[in-house]
Length: 259
Image 1: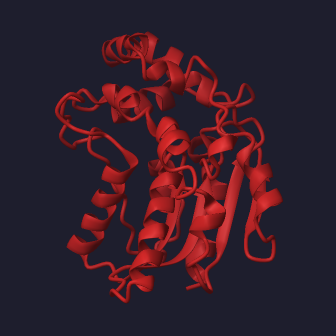
Image 2: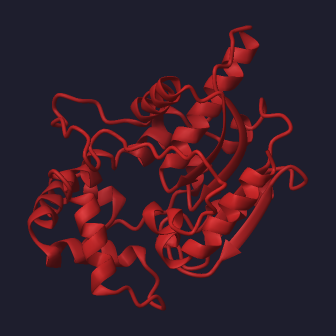
Image 3: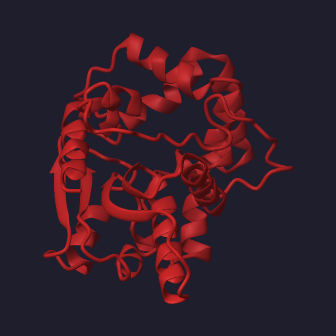
């Protein structure tokens, strides 16, 4: 994950803030029946972290479903400007990796995100928490067949995701595609979200063998003003933070250098 990229980012690209969502890592793990896991909730958490750390301006790098969190944050920033309210944290530049930018672009295989929302998916997460074998069966499809993911790397991913019973988050958070399609199709449309962003660099990165969001980069090229964004297709599967960590670290360094 990002830890592999972080080790390769230049020291001068600092300070850095990694936001751990509720349900992941060392955070609390509230039961889904008592806590509403959602993109809105994650955006609230990011803003709370910015306020706590006194972040006045930022370059944001997102991976996977965090792209939707960023789209919500962009809309909130634009709305505050329109209402004449102060923007306490200015979003300056964006780097989005293998994310979902348009609701009609999602193409997650049926046995992945869609299944995770069902009782079978929750059972699979329960098993993954307790079995390295079951966990690896769920995680390996995120990597390309050309990438020889090592047992050590799989163990590191297992340790990170299952920390404090964290495997259930894969099911708890799996509703983001449904949210995008059914609730916020227009609001979380990248073209709409970029309307209020001025003088900012936007780079979209896709992976050649990404099985989860393979259509999004092509849609961005069709629908967005190419003079205002940069797109790049890199080798590998969905887990670009593992397979192409050195490439992503350079992208982050280059984006921050534009500030």
